[in-house]
Image (tube, rainbow, N blue to C red; front, side, top):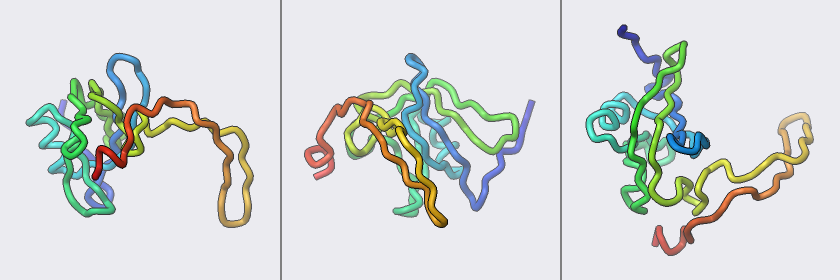
Length: 131
């Protein structure tokens, strides 16, 4: 079966999912080139909207993601990278970017404010890794 991926403004949401634990590690966007490079190399590639460039996860930190499988959702507009993560997935040093749990939610006219609790483990000091 062949499907056409839907790229909104040239990007598609991509979730990195730990293949062993099932834990969601991070969320990013992928460009067509990032998906192609991921498939070719077996290493996760994404598109950085802030830097406006293709990037390989772990290229500067060494915390690479070995992609075991790329999954496509039913609408062909989101991807899941099933990965084996080396080191921490989050640039803040945590094993997952989702290292906080929402405790309370307060909505105002223009925002939603949440209070959170740290629930993850910090694996490295980002100041030492990203000097």
